[in-house]
Image (cartoon, rainbow, N blue to C red):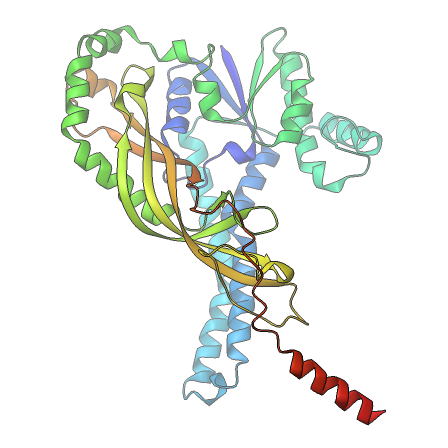
Length: 402
């Protein structure tokens, strides 16, 4: 039996659509090939993310600020709106909490998780490592690492109980992954995909009853994929337009760290699906890379002393040079967005040789910016805005005042 341990960041952001990677892991658990362990602390962390408490607090602050605007008080329905908004804000946290509990309970039941409660020994171990700065703690008395320390202690306890078997821990957090990798008997993976593609999990997907019809019909599968190129391209186009905004890109951008936020996708000029580079994880499961050439509208901040040295594609919203250290800036850049198309056929579809309607998911990778015409960010300094006579006038006023 293979034992897998999940950390909170590897649990799905949306339990209603956990994704193919998570579904395949649960499939193996239901087949009796592996056991999925999750710490009770990780479940609590996951629920807190589903609660969206920070986002809810931001909404409340925004509504309060809106109601304080001078024009708001002059509206006929101001009092009614204030009452409705206040009632909504007051009742929403309880409603969200109840829904999260219901959703989490149903999801955990369907996912075949074994939820590991906190033991007394975990608490003792946590306090020992808290003061020593060992285990999951980056340094002594670092309170931020307390939740990870409970997960770390549970993983050590379960590993000891396996008596020689390995515990496969899937953890996105770098610090916790580094600490767990030092524990004998624990193998760590950065994400679900890395585990599923590993030599441990990949052989589990090769079932005799589906391997043969899948292997014998590779030409038919590829023919179906290529014949429906336009449909897949449309799905990719829609996904990029809807999901790329809000993400971060890096490159030759005149911000402090060379990064910017994507505010919108202006135009998609080309979509290439690289069928020949597809990766077969198991019978009926393909990862197909793709690339999208597009124009992106970017938002970022420019330091005030750099605003006259930015390239031509950058527009700077000039602020107050005495009060503001950074000014808002924007601009359009051509970019290539990379990603993968995940296609999955059920065992029933494979046995029936039915290649239509595979379950489809799209994952976006990094966006690489194209080079601009100029490699330099520093065109000749334009000092036409500077008026020497104005400075002379100010000097004369100062002398007169003295």
